[in-house]
Length: 259
Image 1 (tube, one colour):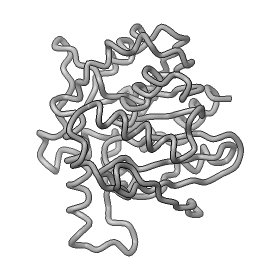
Image 2 (image 1 turned 60 degrees about the vertical axis):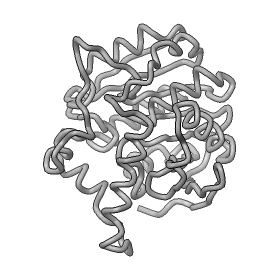
Image 3 (image 1 turned 90 degrees about the horizontal axis):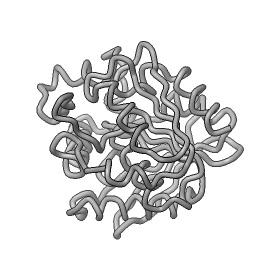
Image 4 (image 1 turned 90 degrees about the vertical axis):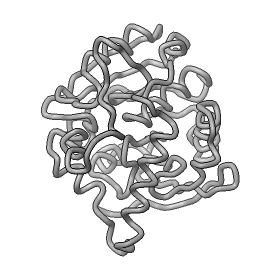
């Protein structure tokens, strides 16, 4: 697997890494919990026919600046800056988990910024009758099974990349968890349901059938909240981060939607 091209954009005075690979129309990807410590097979599948651009969000691997973001609005505007500076304004956009919530915000608040939208088990909603799991309240040995149907997929994601400092790497991953908590604690609820009706971009919602973080029934809640054209697909054999469990199936669904 060849490595992507790396560039850096500045947001609020802090660096954010941007990975890109492939050719064809641009396709942005905002990763879920854990961020992008490494380039993924899922992204390689997308890059076979599209120019995949994957910026790191503040505080996640490859980016800094999450401690400067004190409100949800701060986060939304930071993501807007990242998309603009990464050349993704007006492109197709895929967002997963925490990245999915921000992708939905972009499509709702800045509709001209998103051509077609794919949401993979996004955060942003909460239903007391079907409560989400709190990923920040789990014992470390339980997290992998919460994130993926195949726990080893999560372990592979967060393992120290080649050349990483073995002492500093756990700190970096803890920082990524802190960044997600800063944006979405408690329970990922950002009252996104109030803004979903503003989404006009054709939207595909993908949900792992075994999602242990957000019940699959949340897919219907998102679909009913969006006024534009919306379709829901369940990903067999997948957990919360379906693009890790089933990279080929998720990539096929994404590429079919954005064609």
